[in-house]
Image 1: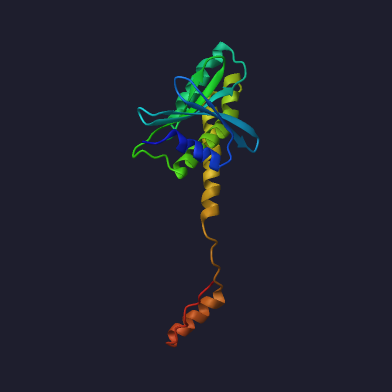
Image 2 (image 1 turned 60 degrees about the vertical axis):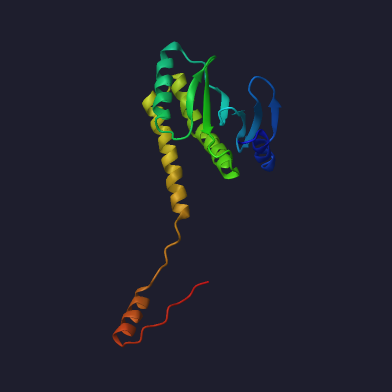
Length: 195
């Protein structure tokens, strides 16, 4: 069974500040530092069921008129259908919550899995919140807001793919011609080794 101390050690390893809150469920109130500010995250662990939950509980939205509530709910529904990990939900007082729940099998929450969850949490909120705010204020429809969020994700994914591809090796026409002549003459040049 995963231990509460293991979660604490992962946070301490990364130098992430947290405070433990006692209550019916044990909760760590975590301050996740991002380039543009701090994200408040609550990490809870249900030992009985082996469930770890990472939640951003207070995503403030502009004060919205009742007529935009339907659009925001539609945007959350559309957006959640695109997520594999986690999802948004509406909370009282004009707030939105984002959470990722993990069912731990094998009794361990590896450091790599913990890091992936925190990165997914931060990236999801960072990409979606500006557009959800516009939907909540009536500046965009639900469809427009979600399309903008997905467009940001697509562009980031394309950039990551381009960065991951090795640079193309340029071969000049002279090199091709010299190689062809060597083949015709039966003198195949030895392979070149680059370090």
